[in-house]
Length: 67
Image (cartoon, one colour):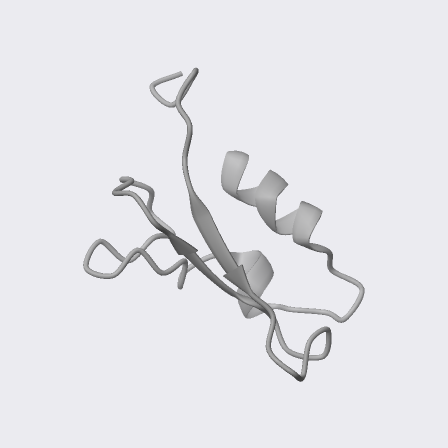
């Protein structure tokens, strides 16, 4: 794929209400993905974060971004 063999840096911040509320996820480097806000790098359009459940894991988020 176009993303193969690249390294991306993410910042995942879990607030005091985690896991009841989803963490904030932000790319530290510029990426062109439909779920990423191109202005600030925040992942703000990922279905998994919008339909958050307290059983969802950080691994689930990473896999959803990869897919």
